[in-house]
Amino acid sequence: LEYEASLRAAVNNRPDLDTAGTGQAYDAVTSLLKAYAAAPAPKRGAYVAQLIPKQRFQGVTGPVEFDEAGDLVPHNGSYVKGTFTYKG
Image (tube, rainbow, N blue to C red; front, side, top):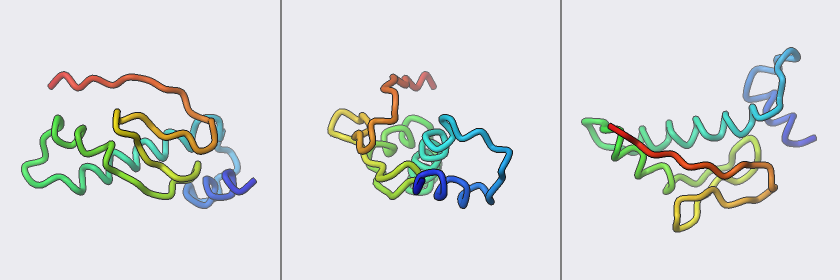
């Protein structure tokens, strides 16, 4: 599978890694890190959170992008919609 090959390459081909949900977690953290990198100093959590939906990139699970409401746009149907509320 292309997805599993991409994931294994991203985590240094660890054969012991359970891949269930790992790709989605990897892409979620990547979204957060890209938003953090895009935020000006001082890095404030609420502002970084606002930048997450603006991130678009090729993740290990496929294209990662968000709609106008900030929800992940499904490209492969393998995500679960949830809600995150920042309480700084």
